[in-house]
Image 1 (tube, rainbow, N blue to C red):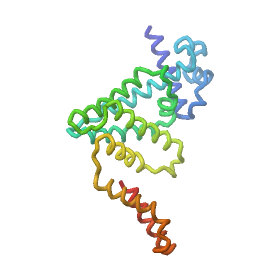
Image 2: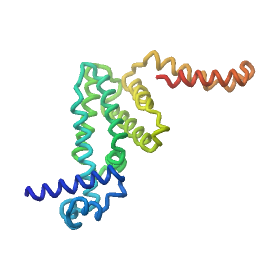
Image 3: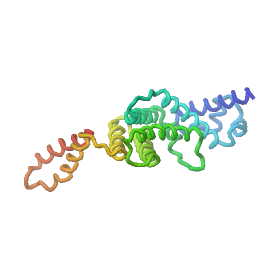
Image 4: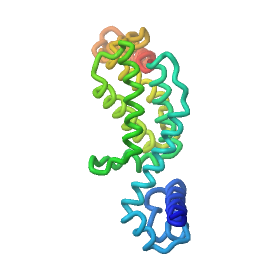
Length: 229
C-alpha cells in the first residue's frame, strides 16, 4: 500500500512539474511515465485514464490554493477579508497559470472534486460572514456566484493577456463593483467615477462647446477619474 501511494505521488509530482514547466500539452502519458520512472500502464491502473490524472493534478492545485487561503488570518472586517481572499485568488492564478486553467478552465458539473468544493466552501464562509453582520443585500449563494464568476473570469482573462499588457488594477476595481452590488454600499470614489464615466459618454455631443483638442484633453482626464475606483 505504501509503495502504491509513493508511486501515485511520484506520478502526480511529475505531471504537476510538466504542467508548470511546459503547459497542458506537455502532460502526456509518455512524458509523465518517463519523468516519474514508471511504465505507462501504471498511470492507467492508478488514475483510470489521463483525464483522471489531470483531475488529480487539479485537485492538488486546489489543495495548494486552499493552503494559501487558510494561512490568511481573518480580521473583524469580513469585507476586508473577502478583498484579501480575492487578491490571493488572482495572485495564485497568475503565479500558476497552467494549474489555474486546469482547475477553473474545464468546468464540468459531472467532474466536481472534493477540493474544488472545499474552495467554494471557503468563499461561501467569507461571504456568510458579511451576511452575519448585516452588510449583504442579496442572498449568500447569489453573492458567491457573483464573486466567483468575477474572480475566475478576470483571472483567466489576465492569464491570456501578455504580461506587459495586463492591467493589474482590474481585479480590485471589478471586485469593488461587485461589492457595491452585493452590499449596497457605494464609496465616494465610486460615485465620482460614475459621474466621470457619464460625462465621458457625452463628450462627443459637445463639439459646439469644446474644440477637438479640449475634448481630447477632457476625455483623457475623465478616463483617469472613471478608472480610479
